[in-house]
Amino acid sequence: MSHDPAKQAWQASVEIAGTPQLEEVQKDADKFFRAIRRRNMIEYVACAVVIVAFTIHLFTLTNIFHRIGSVLVIMAALYAPWQLHRRASAVRPEAAQAMPTHLHLRCQLVRQRDALNGILWWYVLPFFPGLVLFFLGQGYDQEINAAGPPIWMRWLIFAGMFAVVGFIVWLNKMGAQKLQKRIDDIDALTGGSE
Image (cartoon, rainbow, N blue to C red; front, side, top):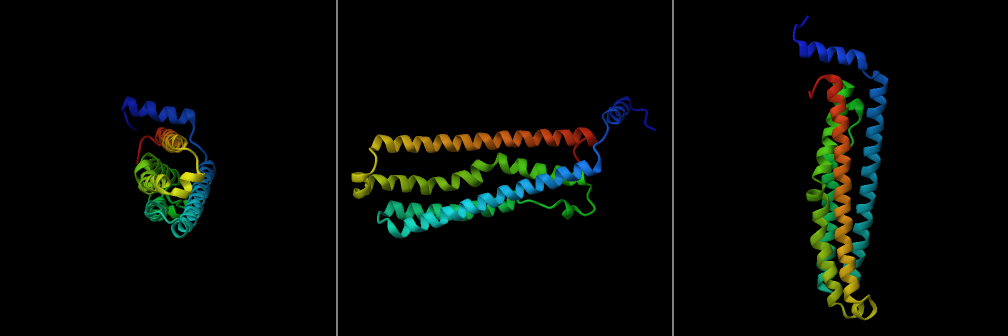
């Protein structure tokens, strides 16, 4: 028996609050695994659609900016899902084997939090060079200039792209904060990070 008052207070608080049932923790881990797997599949499909669309642009548009931009976007659409798989793939709770379920869940939460915090660098920014070149190509293509929207509207669309990217990054930061709260809750129940 420990005579440390801080440790005794912590143990008493855990007894009062009660620890979550093993089944509840396992359900939470399974639900989290399915949500991450679903999110990643949606991202993989979206990148495949981007690859198909920009491959079509690569062979149908004649402007060099469009072509180089298309190639760069295709490369980003190959890089981003690879990074998503590397940084944030879903790991089945059963893969933890001897690891306690709450520790496995905490590790997965930390992994996803870190991936969300860095999403600007490994997922969003790789698309920018290609999209900027593709956008610049709009101004040098005579057919698009004749039939397309006025230049001020194109700049407005470009600014809108930046606003959407900023919003996406902000949403991911909010998601990372929610994951951090769940990590803190697990730490509170188990007595700290493990």
